[in-house]
Image (cartoon, helix red, strand yellow):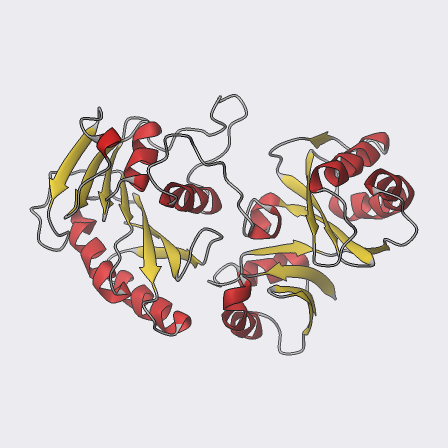
Length: 351
């Protein structure tokens, strides 16, 4: 029997519960820890159960809960980590093998009033004393610590099994001083979750270039230019398509071509194209049809990122309708409701 902690947006918890019922064995247990967060127990391994959740839309994150540790009596995060974790780590290391670890911590409602930074530092110090190789940033394996009111759940898993690179799927991305709109963070999160844009500690901005360097992208529904600005900043040449105008700071930007007009009618630019992005504020089926119109310009295997707006429809129904439409011209790799999404989900496609 495996235990895991599963997270979703509280606003779409009903959708996530429906997906849990479909993805997990019929006999599974679920305890709500806070709105949108559950402790789940089911037959199987974490690896197999997490793989079954990968096609879910409204489940943001899953991490293993291999050990349960009381929080009572601890004066602070350092004291708790030093007293409680060594014996836990001995057991987890035997289960999960060796290799570099990053530490992710999450404090649920009612947890001790500890700051996440000192808690993570205390856990790292404890692991280092036990001989574990920990790093401050990215590593292929994650030790997760999720604290509730009176206990913590601890587990180790590969980073790519956990559905999101952030604790609980909460992507707190920095706003850049010149950012045209918040939608840039929505695209950045999507590219990171779908592993199209990875952190690079050697890069001053903290990110590796989008593939391929110097490639060509089309951005549908570009105005005011949040996604276009992000793509230009990462070395892509961008064809921005919209009836509206881009923000003044983008006008005349090197590598930018603007096509003014509706995406379903504007003359198609020349191909080939390495990336298609689409954030049209339209009905999901109509937006999907528009992306399909530009599909012939994409190189074989090129990625596309598209938002699916719910527009008052039941969310699971809206996603299913868009998925059916998109599948006529793309391979649909994943559709996820991300932290920066509102009444929408984000699809990752391949030509």
